[in-house]
Structures are given as structure tokens and as C-alpha cells.
Length: 234
Ligand code: APR
Image (cartoon, rainbow, N blue to C red):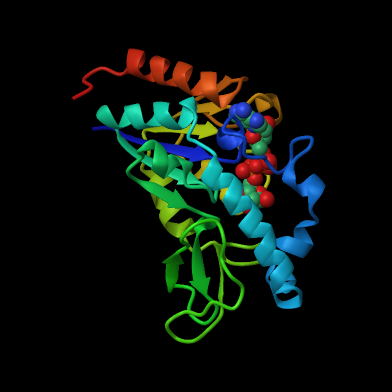
């Protein structure tokens, strides 16, 4: 089976009602990133940061996977599919995608402040500030904040290098190192980009077809195109 990688950003969850970051009325218009999404913010005011993520977690739990998430699951019948997402929601998993690699963390999990490899499922929407890990350290949201290392980058690079097909959905491709991933795909890799503002994106990528539309419709069109072009779909 051919290896197919899907790289997703906040845009794929927009039609599930979850705000993106940099569109008009985006999350970073409402909140100052430096006050809610940096280690310094957590050190300065953990209650404010924790509440920010509790409110977003509540929204995520109320949201449902949309047509784009569900269409990507269908691809698993024909390809070895790997999702690599910048998103912290669990909509890919709830849609049924089997292989999801999160680059920026997972909002449904907490993490020990003394050992980042110690993570825990959060029951419900609220992480209570002061809850402790098994080592006795305070728990924090399991999110990669600005200025922190992106631990899954090396694996993500390896996966994209191996991809024969790459679909990029709903990312402004503006936050590195994640945004640089698309350039690790080989020139032979057939690439598709689905985004209503796609013209602002990576026009210098080889072997790229752009679908300047929302994920809900665009992903289905890409999948039809891929299945039409693929011979030997065993
Ligand atoms: N369908 C597809 N794409 C969409 C849709 C939609 N319905 N709505 C918006 N988009 C596109 C926008 O055109 C934009 O290109 O989704 C992209 C959203 O960009 P951002 O808000 O910057 O989100 P993202 O690229 O995921 O941000 C990257 O920045 O703040 C950090 O950690 C955060 O993971 C996030 C990272």
C-alpha cells in the first residue's frame, strides 16, 4: 500500500466550530499568545493559562469531527495513512483515524511538570489547578507552548520523507518548525493543498495541486482525484 501523509492545521477543525488562530476573529485576536501559550505565562499566572485551556477543552469536547476528518478515514482502505497534525483537538481520533501524530500536544491530556513523558487523560473538560502527577509534581496542560521544543518533529520529518502522497489541509504554514515539514517531502511526492486562502501558501512546492476551498468539500475532491489516479489500489 502506498504511504499517504496528511498534514493538518486548525482549518480542518474550523467547520467543527473550533476557532482557528490567525483568521479574522481567530483565537489570537481574542487572547495575547504570550499570556496563555508560553512557559513564562504558566510560571507567571498558571490559573489564567489553565482556565484558557479548560475553556478550549470544553469547546473541543462539544465539537464533532466534520466531513473532512471523516473522509480521511476512508483513505485508510486504500493507503497506509499517517495524520500529522498541529491541532491539539482529538477530532481525527474521534473520526476514526488510526495513526495520528500530534506536533503541538493534546488538549485532552495533562502532563507532569517534572517529567514531560508522564501524561494523563483528563476526565471531562476541567483540569483542576494543583492536581499532581505520581511524582508529586503539579500537572499542566499537555501542550507544546511557543518557545518549547516540538518532540515529535524528527519522527514527523521521517514520515513525510517517506510519503508518496501528501495532503496539506487548513494550515497557515506560518509556525515553524512544523510549517517547514512540507519541504521534507520528495519532489516525486504528489502533493495537494486544501485551504480557502491557499494562494498565500507554498506555491514553490514541486508536484502540488491546490484546492482553494474549505476542508469539508476540498478534502473529498482531493480523495476522488487520488483514487481516480491511483492504479493497483490493493
Ligand atoms: N477549511 C480549510 N482551511 C481553512 C478553513 C476551512 N474551513 N478555515 C480556515 N482555513 C485555513 C486558513 O486559511 C489558514 O490558512 O486554515 C488556516 C488556519 O491557520 P492558523 O489559524 O494559523 O492555524 P495553524 O496553521 O494550525 O496554526 C499553526 O500556530 O498558534 C499556533 O500552535 C498553534 O498549531 C497552531 C499553529
